[in-house]
Structure formats: C-alpha cells, structure tokens
Image (tube, rainbow, N blue to C red; front, side, top):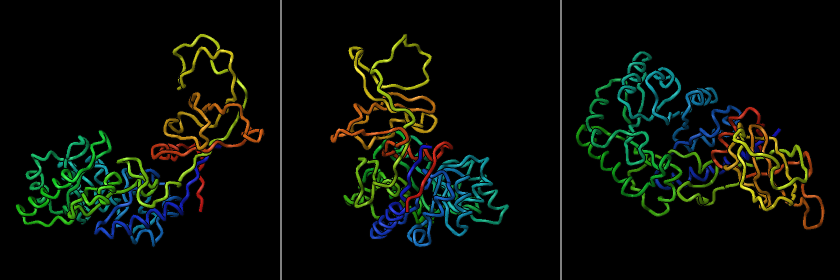
Length: 366
C-alpha cells in the first residue's frame, strides 16, 4: 500500500524554532493542525509538554479535530479557526476555548449555550480586509462590537483578519495597520481592552523579517510553516526551518515498455487526467510505471517526483502512470523494479488529502 512518511522530529523542531522566533518578537501563536484532520496518533506524537509550552493554543477548522485535541490533552487551549454556523454552537462551546467569528447570529447562539453551561466563551472577531472570505465589513464594525459587548457570556479578546487564502491578497503593513487602528478605535469608544490582534499566518511571517508588522499585531495562526518550513507568500523556505518533513511513497505495480501514444478512438468517456502527447511519436516507446494511488487519494499536480526524469502520463481513480524513460541508470543497470516505490515531495494540499484517504498508510519517522 502507498504510504506517507511523516518526519515527526523535523516537525517538532520546526515548532520549537517558530516558538523561539515569535517569542523574540513578542508574538504569541496558535499551531494550526488542520492538515492532519485530528489524527490522534499524530497529535500525541507532536504535542509533547515541551512543544505545548511554547504555544498559546492549538487550532483547527474541524470540530471533530478539536474534540480529538481535547481528548489528547484536556488542559490544552483550543481555538476554532473557522467561523461556526449557529447550529454547531453546542460543540463549539464544548471543544473550543476560543473561536473566530463574523456572524452576530452565531455569536448570540454561542452566548446562549455558554450561559447554559455556566461558561464564558472567548472570541476573536474577524474583519474583512479585502480577501472577501470571512470578516465583518469595516463600515459596520463599531455597531457589530457594540452588540457583541452586550452579551454576558461572551468575552471579546481581540480582532483579526485572514489574508492570502482565497484570492491571495498579500498581507502588507498598511493592511495590518488597519487592524491596529480599529483596535484603538474600539478600545477608546467602549473603554474595553482587546488583548489580541490576530493578524498573522504563515504568509505573514516574512513581514516580521522585513520589520513591516506593526508591534500591536501580537497573535499568529500558523500551520504551513510549522509542517512544511515554508511561507506561501513566496513559497520559499522560512528561516532555517526544515522543508524535508514528508515523503510520499507509492509502489510500482506494473512496469512495462509501452508506446507514447494511445491506440484507438479517444472518446469523452475517460474519468482520468492525462498529459499531452505528440501524435508524431507514434512509433516511440518508453517505460511506464503504474503506481498504486489515484484521484481518490490525491491530486497528482500537488506531487513533485524526487527523480527529475520521472514524467506524469495519466491518472484514474486508483492508479497513476508515470513515464520513467528507458529505465536504465548511468551504470547501465535497471533503475526501477516492480514492488519498489517512486518517491514524491507532497505539497500542503497533497498531505491533507493523503491523510484523509483510507487507502494511504502513514508512517511516523522518529
């Protein structure tokens, strides 16, 4: 069975480095574990007392994942990073100590459930800064906060924003400064203290290096940099973090020399995806390796072969074909054999999908 290698020591070390780096810049942070979909084995291996000690909280976008986080460590502070629907208020209060919100209807429901359970639920109100995903419209922000401040079982601990996830709107000093100004305005008008501006994520990390993060922005929500060592702002390695954290190993289940061009009438019935081929190459042949994964497991476009000579041919629901050329090494030996694996570097989305596939084995490398 194809498997995903998870280099847990490298990930732990990334978390430690980020904790030190952010602490040096007076920034608290939440480790966002959504790529692992609440996998308890992973959470137990990663969230050691030493790792947790450097974090403000651990967050996820799935309530089932937050439930698993609480089962792994009931005392750990959890944050629900996707604005919830009001129908999930009971579970949010049960499993999340903090939630990000942008709907007053939902916040009212959270207040009612929190009151029923004699709890005070903490929230961060999200502000729309141009990404056009979650966030309260800036023109309505003061009125929104005024209504929320009247709810007795809701504690507003800050405001935040999300940038770079949908349209790719870049975080900038000006965007983050808007959050700072809104915080000061709200605090002055309502005589309230908002301890957090949650304006950062992995995409914002390079701005710290450039000294373009206002000092009032003091909370980051980070997943990709911790698990992959990169920032999506430029897809470059951040600091000295490890980018060698995951390997995908599908196995070769067939290896034969075959024509470059398919033979027959091509219809629209195919469910697969294929690369383009040159019809002038009718007589050419090359070795094709069939691997034991497919569209149900992962998007091939999110995988990069470590062997640069390996080329994608096509994929179907449960098998994928790669062209491996003449299958001969420089020493004139066979390069690959049936039963061996090709090795790929998976992207963030690839890892997320592979971990959600029940047909992919996971192996933790200590």
